Image 1 (cartoon, protein in one colour):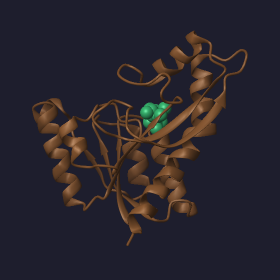
Image 2: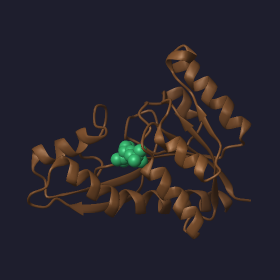
Image 3: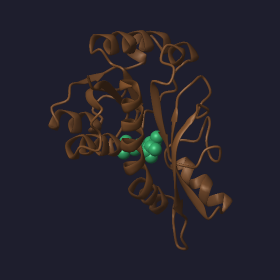
Image 4: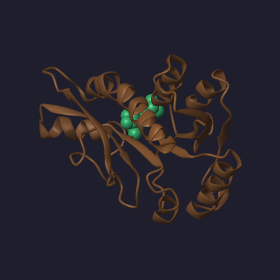
Length: 199
Ligand code: GRF
């Protein structure tokens, strides 16, 4: 039996697309994407899900009475779809310790830097690459890790390094990290976690 995967998104969903493509090419074969959950209405990621025939659900924190209501609604929909593994792919909400404790080693996140550098609260989106740039490190990359109660603090599953090059801007770097690391690493790590669940 394949593990059922829910991908949680907030935006463009290029990492979701990488997972969909990996499913089509067979790189991801021990799990299947059964659900996409967005916490933002109109996220392009939802269109990507629809095109691939994957059900999409939108849950808005404000409309659900805040974090607790959001997580209750999320848990409900995950149960409804018999989800085994959750992948955070550009998901911009931090999940509470209460929620993550219910899914030990079942929630993966992709972070666009080499943890423990440039991570934790406040390090998201372009801000990560701006910080890399400002510090002047010559190597950055991406990390896939399990999610626990510490932001970006769970066990590391996989990492891939990417060089910072002369003439880079945070935007150029963001794109290179996606192309050379994130889109490769996330499907591989997801496959690994799903395969381990089958054992
Ligand atoms: C990626 O850089 C990911 O590492 C970070 O948020 C971004 C999401 O991009 N967590 P996308 O929505 O997958 O295109």
